[in-house]
Image (cartoon, rainbow, N blue to C red; front, side, top):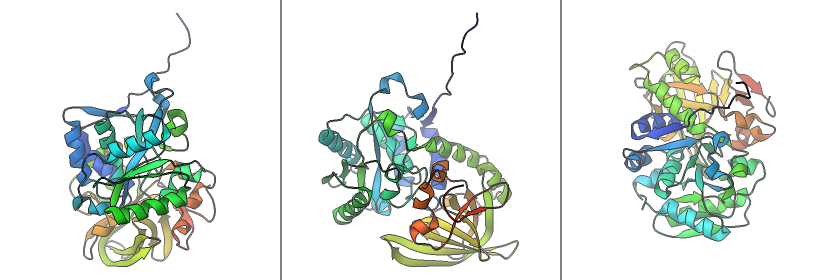
Length: 378
């Protein structure tokens, strides 16, 4: 008997408690030195999972039960480092999703993350388990970025509101009729006056529409990166790390300078200098929450939206910008960033100039030299 072959989709990646450590490493790499420490939510995620699991459902393989349903992007906004001081109540995501569904009259049939790097790579999974909803592996950044107006939906001119913010002490704010810049300003003002952080649930959107203009498969990639990292030996050779993670080594050596420059556009700015042990070359990394730019002996060598990552030299564990100190032995690598940002004019929203840095964007060519783009994607 002959006929058209039946298309067989790969099974979705499953997250179990035993996978959380690998996932934390992967989302920390997607955090590019920022995105918030995932340790707090890692413990919460393990407890929520117990002996169970949660599937990372690809937008291309949505089950029939979700057809025509609505997806809500969720995450944590604000000074994420205060999570250890102002602990979650456990109701923040429930309250934010409930508020936005009441306001719009649309139910939530599934959740997705609005940021895949750092803490928000886990927070959406915790929310999905708490609310008993499926989780779609699509997000609005594909990595960590500091501003809400850098959502892929915002770049494409899609509405983010109505949305709702729920603060751990109980206050809930619904924001409507605000553009991306207005939402960024309103959300930051709210969390600054209400305790430092809040859960944010964006507008419920029909799943087929909601997963367009998104980065897909980010958490599946993070899990794969974490599992590859777990195969490394103690004190691995730099090239072994680059090969395992699919990246390029920038420098391996000692941090000789850490400059903290206060706030820029509302976010912490700074730079880190590393002297490469083998060559004596000096690598300078510029940061605004996340690492944005790498300059090696005065030559631009890597930039956002690619992932600039600083790893502990002995363990190869990713290090956050704010935790680096003079004297630390580290390895700096660059991994290819989300392909989505190289479409059309999207690159203008995440290039160095989008952060006020006077430098062109550099696209990582892992097997060869970096490619400098003076304007738009190539």
